[in-house]
Image 1: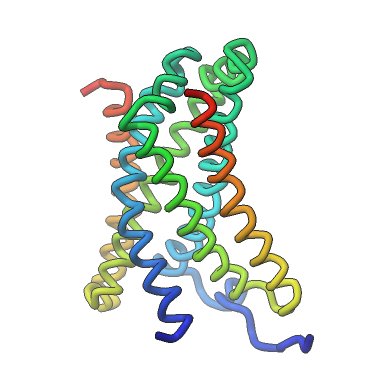
Image 2 (image 1 turned 90 degrees about the vertical axis):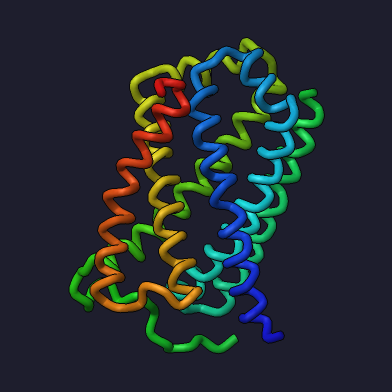
Length: 108
Length: 128
């Protein structure tokens, strides 16, 4: 399979999976954002919200890395700059979810 | 490395604005806003490690008028992205390519995003 086809397929599959997670997350976030510390900790550490949130962020960052690289493709003319931007984007999409997973497991 | 002189797209300064181009550029902007918001939420979850006293600052901000405005704004960016993404997925399956249909689904996605924002907020707040 061509690399571009593979990228397109991954983008579409991840966007399809992401939709129910986005709906679940935004409604739950609205319900907890004004709550006090203990209730917010409870949300991030108790199952099934903990695992659902972690799956949500992993898919969200994976999807964003694929789609933002398309924005770079459209707007950055210089190949060198584009490569650097893509590398930084990929690092960002790995580091933030990993830090969050470690943080949430240390929270519980 | 050689610099290509390919034209960049979309040519915002050349083409006349239409619902399709407006929604396309909004979809991209909203997508970037969403991932920045998710990043901030990740930091919010990490800030919980600092303890209740530190979290109180974030809590006070979220309870303020500006905090509520941001949360409602986030409901809209999520709503718009969900509806427009469904539109894109339908296109990928080969549906809705007709110009008239594409315009109608565009308007539905735009108006629907405001309705969905209200629904998300009300359901989240257990008002239903």
